[in-house]
Image (cartoon, helix red, strand yellow):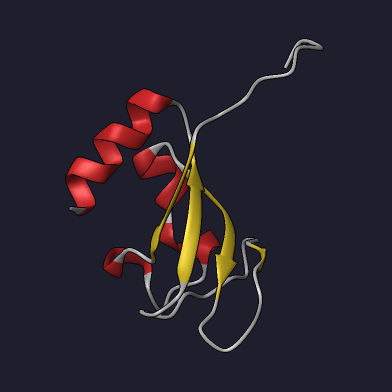
Amino acid sequence: LGGHNVVFPEVEMVAPALIVGTPLADSNFTWRHRVTIVRHKPASAGCTHADWDTVLSPSDLVVVAATRHHLEAFALEVG
């Protein structure tokens, strides 16, 4: 990022239903919504880094990062 530290806002939420059960790589989630799931916490384990192979369950908590504008738009879309 040009040698500059950039801080993106993050939001913790329950995994959005539209990507539950699908590997993040196959969901096109980041491309469609311009947000990134950076961490997830399954109900049965501790918090861990989310990667392209991550498959979320309905009870998982996720941390989503993006610009404020994209986070607000995403929050309105997923309710």
